[in-house]
Image (cartoon, helix red, strand yellow):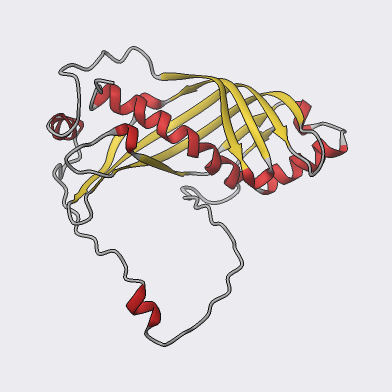
Length: 240
């Protein structure tokens, strides 16, 4: 079964958590006085966003080797790679090939010394994930149920932003990465899409209803992996 986006292209997805809030108003100026907004003061050391310039910047502020290994592959192998999907109470464990990671270009690179943060955004096109996936879905007070299927995922555009929390020590290990995605296309095997098992049918319905959130959640674990691959191959081959 092929699942394609129905909205106009390009569409950027954002994942929102809906929570119940009880707001106690203690005074008209309480929020303004007690909750100041961080003031931004960014600069762009590489106005043209070239890899050459970003690489030079990293090599003076990160623990990089003097050489970068040749790029022999455009792929990452996912082995028992876990994607946690709280929106549908599931874990997806993948053995798959992720391609398109060599297509990255610098989307933006900013430095803000006021709050001591560096922000590197890389845009990827046509990332694909092809392989076998175990869909493990959980039920209240019941053992989990697993469905194994062949899967193909296609993401036409992915922008991954990595935050480095020291402008003079661009340490990838202490960074944080998030992804902004176009709507994905999925091809899923019949053991999930055509199942007659009531619990699996219910799970698949929830999966379809939350397809955008499922994709965004998957990139919470994929984004750091993809960024580490690209940065180590093109910008900074970290010593460790």
